[in-house]
Image (cartoon, rainbow, N blue to C red; front, side, top):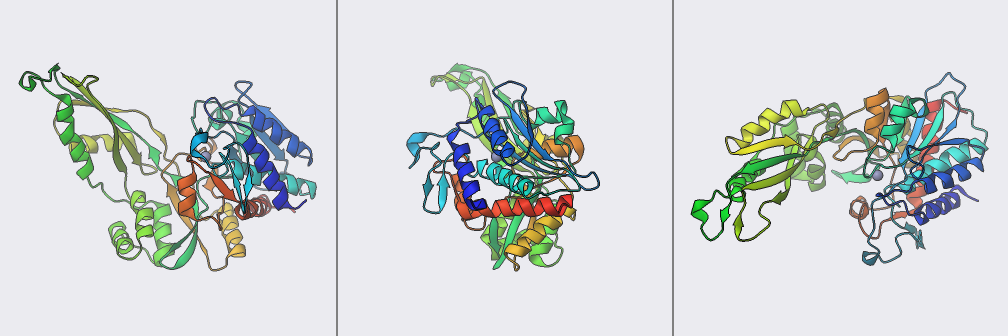
Length: 431
Ligand SMILES: [Zn+2]
């Protein structure tokens, strides 16, 4: 069987196991992977905080004189509403050149590609200098402490490595007429906050006697919308600009250049230069004829890696100005980065050079949170998000993730296997 057929079959089997989180039930996927890997001589261990939510960690032990690499993934998925799909979301059906089903892109495709990479190396007799580790974790999508976060705390030796490859990027994009592959080296911090705007209730037929909290929230929302945060250049974004423009630019200059020449470049760059604020939820009175005494506004806020809530809060309070409201952070997670110019970075570059010599690897900071955060925080692991997608249009892929008709090109799946095999050999110094 070819690697292409092998990874196709494994992905189909993974999609057919419903691991929608909640509730997750990732043990089914962990057992499937354990049996598959054992069939190719790779031993693995299941680690579960709760029996039905197992994480799988497999390893080809190194000789002890090289760098270790973790191929990381998660086996849970977001839900799927079958009525919105053209196929059964848990069918794993092959249609033309694609495999369809929930998780095909996020991220059972990468689970399968990483598993086939380590299994195929093992049966070829691969003997790395450093450990090659494969971890398929539970509970990434909801994040309630059953997955990698828990493994890092309770079984750190199982998942501590020098380097890690995870989800996050890998898209092939064109900017200014040139070809780039995105590799994520950093993540913004998800840092939503809530405004509790206070007023006084009253009957809606006599507005003069009340103090309408909803009306008082309106100018606060407008101030947030009008705010233009200070632009800043992190190392990954500076490197990105230099790779595209051919020289260092100030952030405002880079943004202007992008806006004038390439809309896609502007959309990519803008959120990487500052924190972002998007008011998304509001609640006030439950009853139409009652003036609300309280209005709650939730704001999705993403900080740059390294930016802290302590640093940002006074700025936001100044933007909001005086008023009858309380400000509270709802959450704060992520916001880590890994350095560039490492052996893993070189491995990604040499892989891309091998498949498309005219393409350049572009470091990118992603807006969302991934499990890479736990590794960077716990062990200082250099973690990148890279699963190359050469065939599927990146805009289509972005639309399908967490949505109906999710599917992956089999060409991209096969490319992923080759990528992870290449990175394993390059980083762990195997042969
Ligand atoms: Zn994911």
